[in-house]
Image (cartoon, rainbow, N blue to C red):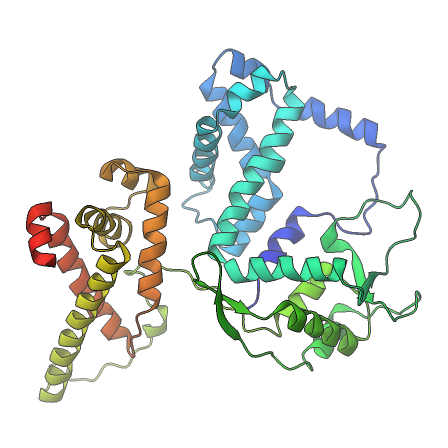
Length: 398
């Protein structure tokens, strides 16, 4: 899969050739004049004004706009597009006591706005990016680190003087160390055509991480060799953003994340239906077999969930509640609402969701209809279990 991490960075970072049209001091003073009245709003506890200022930052933040195009934000209307994100940012600042910190440290309006926009909101969105596309995010960072630290690569846009214009990492140009300084740069289309001549590497399936649930994909030494091969094939220096994209196109990156079980299946829009829609004997037999198989999948899945909480009935009851409210219930609830309903912390709900999604990914269905029957059978079973008292549930599990 093609990484989308560079799309978000492209929106956030300025182009390499852009030069400031105004002196830095004048620019800074203009930005300070445009910042909101944060100190005044915090001192007067004007929640409505704070909300308006936060919504303004969210609406015009470049990383938020990039997140929309990358599919990380779901809009329901032009006026309520960023309401949920603003609410999440407000709750995060409130829970971390950042508003009190701003007043205690006597930060200016400009400093407060810079911290919220450049640190708090950016961290909130990059955390979502890391969750949705973990392998792309991790490999992009590894590639950036290697091209900066390895002796096989060097910068080609550095003049070596202290007055060189500041350039963000994604716009810095790197190439092989053995190339001369005047190495000619090729256009993006030519680079892409040449990079595709490099073979796609096999996936390294060794498990790593503190929980052992992440694959290596490619070792650092092999990744460095791949970067060298891509640059050698392109025969041209390239900026880090382009280089990351082309290198990752030669890797079997799989950013898998769970989608709602009741989502529409667009692949079946042109599904062929016979004239006689009545079920024949063969279809009935297959249906009954698939129902039995789905029930078997449900039993095994619930058994795996029971094992992941080490057979503890209280934790099993909680993870069933998370499964029901987050994935199976027709009522749409946020994670915070689920945590409040179950009387647990938000981090515990996140941990249970991670375990549930890990077990769901381990399931393998040969047909879409089989997966739908599994969903239906799982919904019926879990609905009964979540309404069962813990003592009776313990008897059923045993």
